[in-house]
Structure formats: structure tokens, C-alpha cells
Image (cartoon, rainbow, N blue to C red; front, side, top):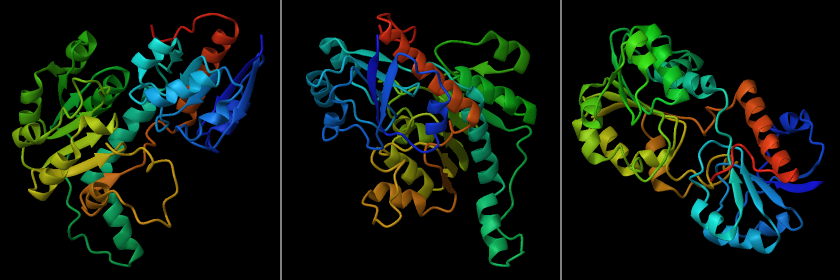
Length: 331
């Protein structure tokens, strides 16, 4: 049976990966627009929509999708915090995600942010371009021997821990489930969140966004951290309370901040605002700190991860087209 699916928010870098797939049984309609209440009509006639992290699958939007005949939502992300999954269940809309893709993509990006901040590579490059070859203000530190706290040691956190072990770092982990290999082979210690905050020189965030992790890093947690701590977030922006990060930077409690995600990134990231005046005062404040390095949710952006991601998305759609439940379907 042929299934029609509207792919929202398609980017030029994704098209070749879709085009490389066997989509027999599927008719895909590619749309550059984000899914919002104003763009639901683009899915009229489709049984499924394919969305991304900055698409809006709120209760209102899901109801509108249901009204135009959509029965399935495939998100080409691991996280599903942009989808009102309870409303989807109520409406009988099936939801499936991409449960995993190359964990090395995100893990390696988190290490890149650490090293770039530590060795002040962006500042150093800017000085060189201005023909300023002095080394003033470029002193970094050895990663070797530093204590790194990892929030969330799933696939990505696990890879990050192994890379950091190679640098000679000491590992602290906060997670609800313990990984015996990380403990026995890499010397990781599982601790409570407060102890991790108190003892870590670097804190790297790899946890999913849930009710328990929303604003997990807040004023209280930052106050418990070492002065000059480095915080890296490549997971979800809302795990950190943005106002608390800004206060921590102003007080110099936070010495370095690397972010691939931002609490209020929807409508900002993945779009060209180069000719606009950014209206988000919190984001503008963050970009004003020289010890802050922000990338626009690109940690996943490797050939390997994109291939894994699109292949998994197509499998989800094909299972539904065949009248079967996808193995990645939310129960």
C-alpha cells in the first residue's frame, strides 16, 4: 500500500540522505516550512508527517493534523519533548522516533566544545586574523587529571566518558542506571547530582529532557559548583535554566560555557536571522560573553549520523505503510 508523507523542515544537507533511500511504498512531499499551526495544511492528504526538533507538535497542532487525515508522526530525532505525546495517544496518532544514531557525532562535538573553550581557539583565530600574534589571554589548562561530571551516561554519555578517559580525566556520573563497564574499565564513579556539581571541573550534559531533568542545572546547582567550572550542554537546552547560567557567568562561578542547544531555540535555530534584530534578550546576553561558545544544534551533523537517522525514519514510515507497528513506536 502506498503511503503519502509530508516531510517538514527539510534542509539541503538532508535531501541527499533521503534520496539515497529505497522509498518504495512511500510518496514523500518535501517542505522547507516548519510544522506549526499555520502550516498544518501542507500535510493535507498525507497519512504521515516527518518532523524535526524545532517543529511544533503541540496538542493544538496534533488536533489539526488529525483533522486533515494524519495518522502517524515520525520525528527524525531521539528526543520527543517537542511532541505532546499524551495528546497523540488520545487522538490515536502513532508516534515514532529515531532511538539511536551515531553516538560519536554528539559525543565528539561535546569534546570539541571543551577543547575550543579551554584553549580559546575562537579568540586565538580572531587575533591571528587581526595580525595580533601575542599569546596574552590564551592560557588554557591540561585536561589530564581533571574531574569531569557526566549528566546522563546513555550511548552518547558513554562514548564521551571513554574519550575523556583517554585524556586522563577522572569520571563522575549521575544517572539512574549504572554502567558496569564504565565503572570497572574506566574508573567512573556514580554519584548524586550535588556531589557531581561540587567536585567536577567540567560538567558535560547528555541527559534527555524530562520532568525530572527540566532546569536540573539551576541557581542552586550552580552555586554548589567549583569557581570557574566549565559547563557543556549538547543534550536539551531546558535542562539548564538560562537565567541561572547568565548569573553564573556574571559572577564568574562559570568560567566556560559551551552550548549546542538553547532553552528557547525554537524559531531561532535552523533559520537565517542574519538580517534580523534578535528579540531574545537572554540569547543576546549569552552571546556577549567571551567565554561562551554556542553552536546551533549541529552536534548530530555528521555523514554517519544523518545516514542512520534517515534510514531509521524511512523504516518507521515503511512499517506503517505495511500496516505494521514500527519497532520505534511510542507505546
